[in-house]
Length: 355
Image (cartoon, rainbow, N blue to C red; front, side):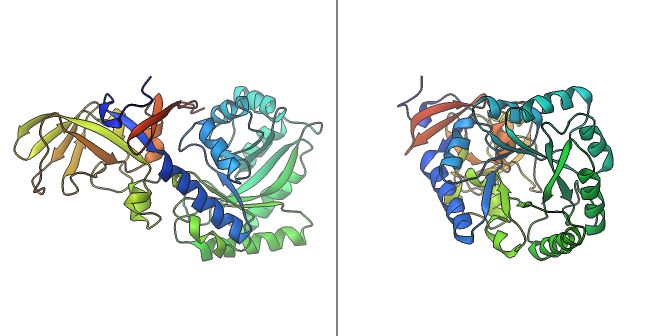
C-alpha cells in the first residue's frame, strides 16, 4: 500500500489526482448549476470510478452519464440507478444486455436515426418501456439529426413504438455555440408542442461550455465530464487555470542523449497520442518551456532547446495531459493525494469498457 508515501516516491509513470483541487472543481460546478436552477449530470467517462461519481452525486448532481453500455453496467453494479447512455445502441447481444439493464435502473438512451429506433423497438415492450432522447447535431458535426424537422419526425416515430417512450432532446455542441443550440432547441420544442409531444428532458453538454450553460434557456440539464480533473485542453478553452488541474502524470527522466533532448518513461501508454489539436503531448509544469515532441509506446521525447533550466537523469517531472479522459483509461489505478501525500488508490473500475 502506498498510503502515506510522498507522490515523489511512487514508481513512474503514474497518474496522480490532487484531492483538494478535484473537490473544489466538483463544488464550483455544482454551485453554478444550483444557482441557475438546472440539473447537472456528470459524465463518468473521464474517471470511470464509482467512488468519484458518488462524490459528484453527493454534491447535488442528478444521475450520471455513461458513453457505453459496459460502463453503465459497472456503475449499475456499484449502486447507481439514474443512468443516461449517450451512444446509439445496435446489435442483438448489446440490446439484450440493454434490456436487462433497463430492468434494474432508471435508464435513458439516445437515437439519431430510424434504424436505431427500430432496433430498440424490437427489443423492448410496454411492460418496461425504454426512455429515448433524440440526439441533435447543433453544430458539433458528430452524431445527431440535422434539423428541428428531423428531430420532430424521429420523436414521432419513437412515440408510436409501444416499447419506447420519447423522453426529450440531447446535444453535444461545439464550444461557444450557445446561441445556435438555443435556436435549435427552441424551434424543435415548438414543433413538438404543436404535435402534442411532451419533452421532459432537454440535455445540453460539454465541459468547455459548462459555465455558459445558462445561455441555453431551453435546457433542463447539462452533462460534463472533464471538469472534475480539468486538463490542458480545458486551460486552452479558458475553462480553468493551471491551478485547477487535478491530474498530473509524474514521469522520470531516464536518458539525456544530447544537451537538448530528454527521454521520459511516459510514452503513449501513459500520456496518450490524442493531441486534441496541440502540437505536443502535454505541458511539463516544472519545465514550461520544454516540449514533449513525440511519443512511442514507452518513451516520451522532450525538446529542451527552448528551456533555460534542464532536468537531469533521474529527475521527476509533472505533466498536465492534453486530454485527461483518455489518460485515466490507460491506468489500472489512479493515485490520490493531499499536499503530495498519498491518501488512497482507486481502481479505474470501467477501464476498457468500450462496448
